[in-house]
Image (cartoon, rainbow over all chains, first blue to last red; front, side):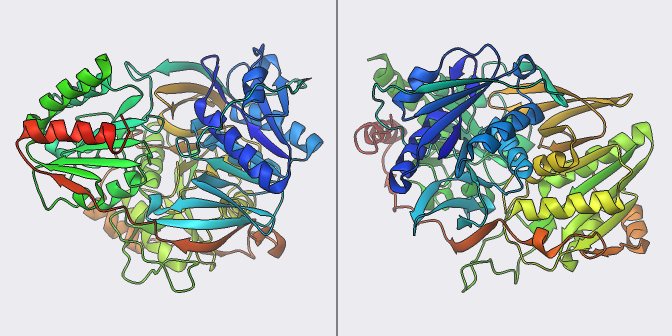
Length: 323
Length: 260
């Protein structure tokens, strides 16, 4: 059996959880395993219909009033109880903030390890394996599991969704015994104007030293406001100059991203930056230095003053998205 | 307050990574090794807590003897003491094995503590897993990827970074915290600090001394092959005035790459 942890945020199933479920479905066809899902929380809506559509056969709902907000130890203890009862061979999470916090805690509680942030899964000789980036993607490690269950977190934005199909399944609600929560989330503080994290965006508009000032990042924000599902990225030098918050930093000391489109404005392409974004599907580089290393990995390049290119791009994007 | 900070020595982020001929490890020759950048935020936070509340900062690393250089840098930043838990195994990219060594070491050698700090992940293995694993094995609260930490009267509040927002998390001490960029600005070592660090002894603790068994040291994950990422297809440089190139780009993104 494969068990997929489903993350609920703002009353909705995270898209990356459905990506993980879709991948579980593909693995299950090779290994002849069943695919089940688990949701943890309190007073949960019925998300089951959507999960059945994406291939879940069973939906386990673990509830307790103390699990209304996320808690690493609370969620982990609830999951350990379920895993010991149903014995899945593989447990998958999406490598979100929650998945990366929770999966290793669960793994240690089950006396196994975790393969983090995987970008591919494989079945070889009937065993489950993963490929995960190391050194922020400068190398890829094919990794096998020596113990059961195999626990892995899958990187968001990499695994395609399956075609949803109307299907029936089983819902199993379980009241979890009262938990003594050690770390409690008191509240969630939303960052102003940032609905989408750079790791989740389909389009990343990124700026580097060539942006010259914090003020100029507004130009990128304007572009992002036209493009749907986009977020702002930045190089380390832009962040260290204080032009934009560190949560936007892409690279080996920031975030690793794999959007459909990555547009780099005034980013030269230091090794540590390239490591964090070179798995993007399409890369565009706009830089006045023709020797900038970023051009070596870009699908499309423009060697010019970015401040002259941005206004035209803005108008062209507007034309497309106002259609 | 007694604070334990666990650090790792990693290849400099500006390094090119070369893969060795057995395809199971990287070539370490000519690599420059540094303190994992996220661990520097953890060391800095520990020093600031000590400066405001008193206590002791102990920095500990698990790994090869070369990690002593990294420990000495932390002493130069102001840590009170440093220890190396000597593990002669090469990098296995296996977080649970290291988490077990750390947990055993804490139980046998460093059991008096109020706070355990880590960097959010090592740049290299990129697991982001050891802090959560150690917290679980010690039965402690954890807050990972923290950009603000407040400790008062045995309680703590930490802000952890999540997608597009922050979570405010409350916990009791002792606890495990992992540091994200933004938590603080790590200090540079002073000349005085460097000189003092040179004179400090860094005790080496063996795996036998912490009482970890052969069975516990067996990895649960096995890296079968390390490869370079596939090369990217060669790109097109668009020629013309900004007006022409920008228009051409949008057309290519729409009709050729099909990403907008």
